[in-house]
Image 1: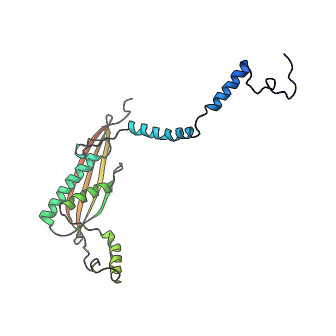
Image 2: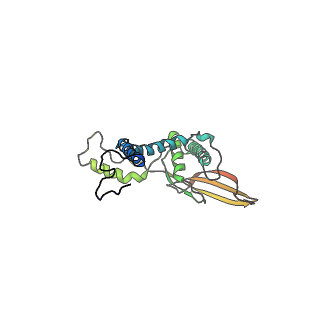
Image 3: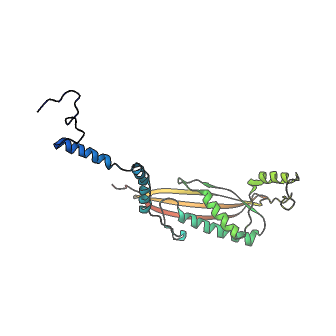
Length: 230
């Protein structure tokens, strides 16, 4: 085999592909050059991957809805306790207002949670308020008086049309306020957690400060303590 001079091209200066192994390598390089992927194919795959993963996640996850009156007991305060409290309190207060009180406007003061559990008291009061309003028990919200006063004052400037201007002297004052508290007693016995919960509401006359109505809903719950006896 002769020695290639310096600067002599590979394959004896011929522009044709070399033979044997060098020829195979040369053909492979040409085939890779002629079959390179379209310039946007990699970008399309990158865009498609998150869409595919999102579809896979949604198709594999399931959500089911249940009727609230079919709620089952849970270890923590849940739907069953909320619905029973709302049903009992709404019925009792509505009956008292229509048979004994008959007149006046009510307003919520507060419902305090004094238990160790996280209880959304606003959820309870909103549901009771919703049910009582449907029963035509009148409520007022004095928290918007400042906004209403501002709107009444603006109406006097002459910039509000006469048919939508707010009149003076039509505010309603609450005659009674509703307040309440949620309390509990918790004991542990033989690997079980025994919880007694009471929800108490009071209706107080603002004129006399007298408690004119009260109602209570009680729950006695027993649940197994996890890990007991292991």
